[in-house]
Amino acid sequence: MAAVDAVIAVEDLRKVFSVPVRDAGLKAAARSLVRRRTREVAAVDGISFTIDPGEVVGFLGPNGAGKTTTLKMLSGLLHPTSGQVHVLGHRPQRRERALLRQLTLVMGNRNQLQWDLPALDSFELNRAIYRIPPREFTQMRDELIDLLDLGPLVHKPVRNLSLGERMKVEIAAALLHRPVVLFLDEPTIGLDVTMQRRVRSFVAEYNRRHGASVLLTSHYMADVRALCRRVIVIHHGRVLFDGDLAALGARFSTDKTIVVRLPDLDAAMIARLGAYATVLGTEADSVTLRVPRADAPGVTARLLSELAVADLTVEDPPIDDVIEDVFAVEPP
Image 1: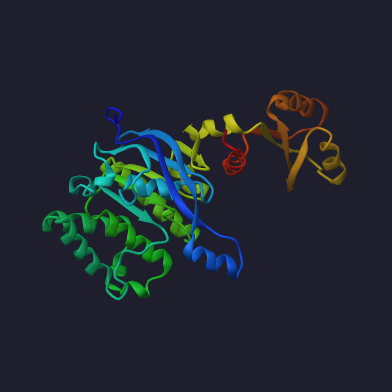
Image 2 (image 1 turned 135 degrees about the vertical axis):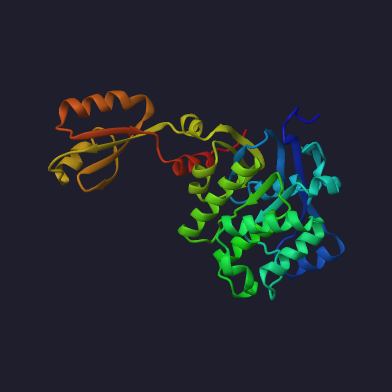
């Protein structure tokens, strides 16, 4: 059963692929023509979660974790091997028109626009496909052009656009039918920092204006920090963590970071600080230390009492480092 009021409800979802297996060499290749061997690989291995209306959730994991396979099942492009998935009360694999008109899947490494035509022509094609009323289409098209600062870009052939410009018009094309569920698979991949920031701002504004639910995969932690309060971490097809982004560090990180600012910092002082904790790096008159979480209060007290400390801060480690630690955890 789908969770009551959840926009997306996933229960024990699995996707198993049958992968050909053969040894190296000409003889093995010849044998495989008449006697093919395969093995089963579980790309998604029994995951469960729900997403509420208006939530923006980060869907994190290393390459091969099962993120894109999950998004394809949620959008109806792949059939699950087993388990249940409901999106807006529908089963995506049935590809019902009522559902398809309300969701979109944006993949940062895939193109949907006609290469030799201006984006406006592709927009018109999408209008016909989704049967969007002309007045509603014009209003939404102009709103997207304004929000994404497309301006003259929509009049150029798509092949003449840069990667960042093309990604922006791709996003606009995917949202013309005003979907309320967005599956964004690496939407900022390959973009420069400025363009990444623009795309993030747009996703946040679209979510605010239309109350859309967003499931976002990204290897750029700046995307996740800017947009997501909640994250789901998946590894080897299984969910390792589902909760607040802030709680991720508390659960998986066993260390604290201490930044100490000292007057007259020199090599001798840096060496001395190594007796208190692991020195991660130095910058100007400050040193960054790493210390086990349980030892942080005692180390902080010693630093303040034994050294002429000008300033001191105690922080959780950067979320990027925490995610790397999470990926290193083998699921049970």
